Image 1 (cartoon, helix red, strand yellow):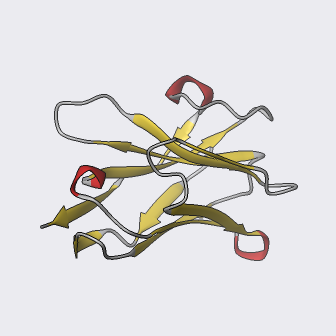
Image 2 (image 1 turned 90 degrees about the horizontal axis):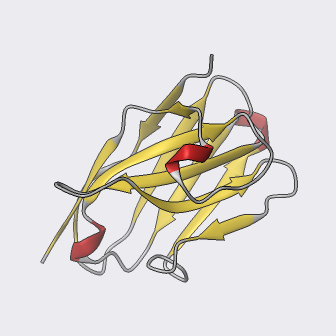
Length: 121
């Protein structure tokens, strides 16, 4: 079993920045961030391979968000810049037992409790 705990959500004005953190109880080969807005399905945001640091992003966040990891701390990060109203959602950290990056919830086995990000105008 893997425990994931997210930190860093909050309220920010449009155009602002936030950094989310996810502390994992152990390192997993592939980790990612997803988000879920009210009334919508959970959607992929970004993923990273722990070895090699290969990243994948959803088109909607490319060039604004950056996913990274700290090997020593088994901590995953999501730096979010130029935040937009449509970025408002609960953000979830996820980890996969596999080694292939999948941009879908089906590819992940463990989930954090989520952290709310609200972008205001």
